[in-house]
Amino acid sequence: MKYKALIIGGSAGSFQIILKIISKLPKNFHLPVFLSLHRLKHIRSGFVEALSTKSVLPIKEPVDKELVKSGIIYLAPANYHMYIELGGRIALSTEPPVNHSRPSIDLSFFSAANVYRDKLIGVILSGANRDGALGLRQVKKYNGLTIVQDPLESQINTMPNAAIEKTNVDYIYKTQEIINFLNKIEK
Amino acid sequence: MVQHNLNLGIIEQKKIIEVLKQKYALDYKNYTPTAFKNRIMAVMANNNFNIDSLINEIETNPEFKLNFLHNFQIPETELFRDPAVWRELTSKILFKINKPNYKIWIPDFTTGDEVFTIAIILKELNLTDKIKVYISSNSHTSINEEGFGFFSEKHFLVDDANYKRYKTKENEQLNKYFTVLNNNYIFDKNLLSDFNFISKNIDEYNFPKVDLIIYRNKMIYYNLPLQNKILKLIYDFLLPGGVLVIGTKETIEFNTIKDYFKEINKLNRIYKKVK
Image 1 (cartoon, each protein chain N blue to C red):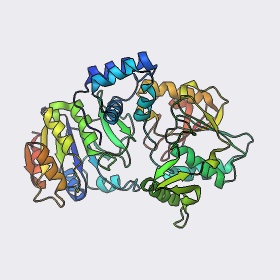
Image 2: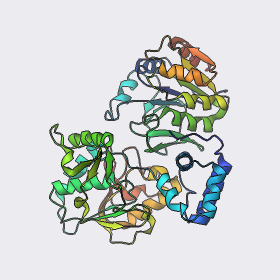
Image 3: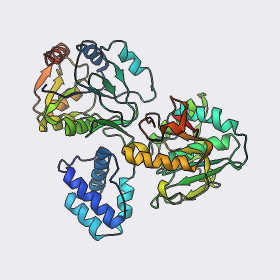
Image 4: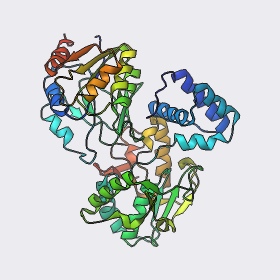
């Protein structure tokens, strides 16, 4: 297997895209999926339930030091940063927000790139700030695969454009192409 | 934002851990690696250091230790963070105290958000002079330090929103516990006057056993062996039937001591010592 993990960052305008992607993943998808999404911190529950109704794979907010398993979607909990640690555990953090964000997409991507190196797929979706651009660059630096949602399709294209500006990304894809790609890597 | 210095690899991290131990007697061997890396980068960014100048400073300047600790430490995030936790703690535990000499311990506070939260809760329950509260922190943080209890307006507005959720009333105002000066919201430290401040790390505590320990979002920075050690300490310092509150996304289910606590509220991570 070429890839070992998938990480997706999204902000404003990404919710419907995330729903589409996780509803179209193959049932036997063999990678762990990390979602680092900007969200309202006071809505503590409900978000994961909303995603669950459409998701093919089990989805959960991890607890600190939880072991990463394949075929599970891990959603960064509200008001925590989410890191992936060497040794395959998830660590949470209440360090200060980065780019006004906690969870920070950059910090999640940095830690995932450090662990999975060239076996990581990083995806940046719609969003209104520049979080994720440095993180995606780090994925590329370790020869991971980088995908950005087509800014022409993105509801808010600041985040995709920032990512494209910082990195010579591998693919600029529309939602359906992202879905096709993720289904193809299974075969 | 923190500049991500891409050269801070495992070898450099190990070197820094080694000199911190040698020169400052600080042991970060069991710290969660990513958070350690981020904190070191924060220290470097705030001092305009690279790795070599940081190591050199630690090796040659004992007085830099305070600066290091100050920049390394992780601020607490909000007063009344997770309002439901405090509501549960108030209604199910503190409101029902039926023994004299009830004691609370809040270890390893940094910016004091959780200490201030408890101070307000006890004040409103009229328990301030009936309960003994121990608050402890390592030597670089003191409740008398300049700037302690100062919050930005942005911070205060989040606190105020949390407080309204805690009270489940929109018209409850948190500002009665603050004075405003030059855009700073300053917490009324008179509310802390009966608290016992102890300048010690959690593993150096040697005070009476307590009924309630609030230790939220601290162990997320420890690996499992260190968590096990700290939880054993916490267990030992709790009186029989004592209560432990940890962060809403923490668990003790991966720890050796898990069978010695019973979960009394899963969502809010409130545990009771049972053996």
